[in-house]
Amino acid sequence: MLAVALRRRDAKESVTAIAEHLGVGHSTLYRTLTTYDEAIATSREPDSP
Image (cartoon, rainbow, N blue to C red):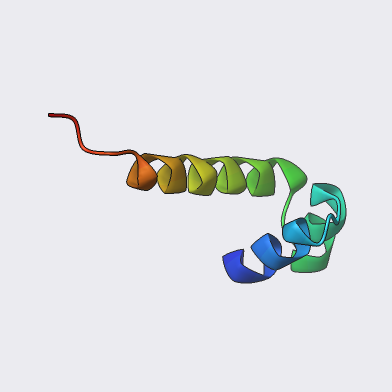
């Protein structure tokens, strides 16, 4: 489900439309995408010395 949401977001579809398509609330999808984006950003940060 997350992969579908990410592809549709990359295609510039609104979060509300994606959430409706997936059958979840838009706030749930916003929260999930934010958590995913933060996890990706954290995993790409260089290690501190």
